Length: 261
Ligand SMILES: O=C[C@H](O)[C@H](O)[C@H](O)COP(=O)(O)O
Image (cartoon, rainbow, N blue to C red; front, side, top):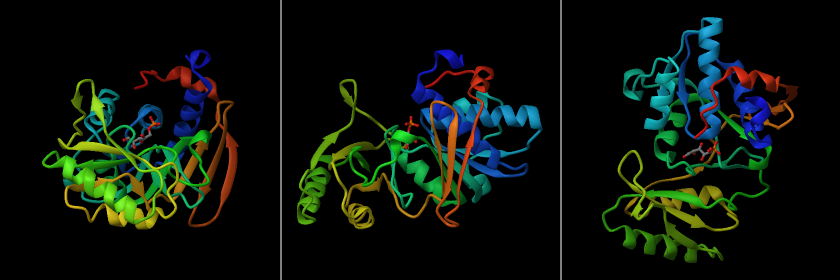
């Protein structure tokens, strides 16, 4: 129920609710992963039900596949459709250029493949995710399990050569064992505090043997929808420079089953 939601969850709902206004019937859609994306999946399912929209969805994690199907959405594989009209996803941080850190929910690899295969990517976020400089959120890097400690050492060496001052690298755990992504890989979280040159870092990380992908999304996001706990919402389009302010009725979240992950 909306009255029981924290302001941050209300803000996530607001961004998610506004984002599904961009969906048109016939679209092929990428569905992100995480608590904000989970709201979006529910809002989308409501539009499909109430407005008769017909959409085909590709999900970015097994969690999102399960949620979308349980909401009655049609989910296919990316290989079934190959290209998408629009992807809507959350983020851990975004800057003024709409470059992102993603992967806090361990889904960065499929998220980056799906977003890159989309004509447009919309990021949905609460206002606290906006930063002047990326890096306060530890940067997730997906690595193959084979020789992961060597890969970690190579990452640390690379950070040193780039003069990155803060370079704590830790293996993400799930209880007593390393967390496995949907693709069976491990995740290293790079606590860098500040990322001076995200474009350069994204490129050099992916050149290290054993690195599968990193959580920096550079020049991928087109639009950010920023929600606030009181219902205010801002839509910012990086290509047109257009900024639109509006509001969402937060009581609408009562109609949506709020099984947040
Ligand atoms: O791997 C997970 C994703 O990149 C999420 O979109 C990101 O962590 C944001 O998640 P949330 O909406 O739960 O803050």
